[in-house]
Length: 366
Image (tube, rainbow, N blue to C red; front, top):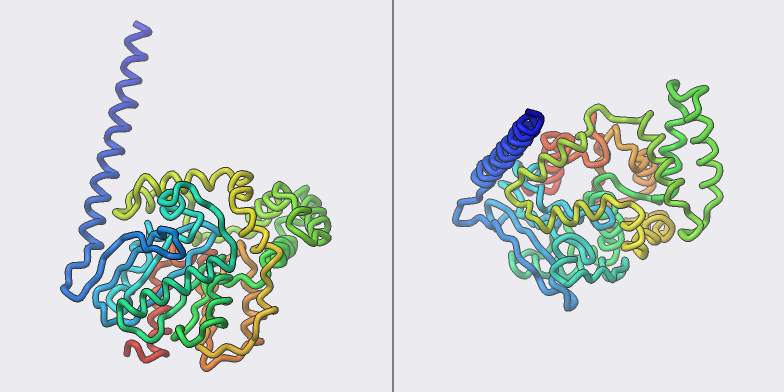
């Protein structure tokens, strides 16, 4: 009798699992139909481009190849977004040809090159330049739009100052100015919240801020201290509009563009210690090598910053302070309401509206 009950429970679990898998497969097929680009002037491609002797994964989507080209430089480091790009950029594909690519040392590019993760900021900037040149040649453009997100704003900021002749405008999404200071400033913001007062978290966070403020290089930084600082800060600065982890996972597995390679890389990122170790050169540069104030504050191209009002992964007040110092042919700072660090996932509609506003400023659309 007991074995029969166990067998029944096992059967129900298996049936439930099969139904979930079938439902996911159905959603993937439905989404594939929804995002398909049929027009004769459209482009919907995924392929590997030879850059610097390395096969680098590139995705291109757009309804008219005559449209301006935008290259989206993903964040992380090493957190590609191409497999969910249709979720947040579909509304823009009638106005832009959009290129997403997996940077060297991560995602599909990592696995296509036998797990080669050798990387540094100079190589990433060079790779972006090669991608820009490919896009210009293929689509007959003199310039492209560079849109960087988070870590991608580090690469993007450097590139647009190095090669402004290739860039029609720079869009900094969740702009990093000095990542280590950004994290500390987020924690200081959390300490100002009424809810944290006279709690154990206030005492611990204060101690972490004091300890981490004295750290001057990557090798003295404790990843466990950093993780704890971020966790406590997030507890008191949570944004209601931020897309929950389960919703992000659902968007991924139901995306027509996600494959097993993307899943493998996503799971690989979940081990923070190992992920930091694998991407040590980039993490070292991200936290202690890059300070945007060391770059020129005079831009030769229009500059537009997008910041989620609930972004407490990187202190966006720091980005606003920097923005006020710069000069450019045109500039604007957009606050996205009720959105966090990845506002394009949290609020695709607001994100697309802002990008269209920028396209209007550039006279690309009316």
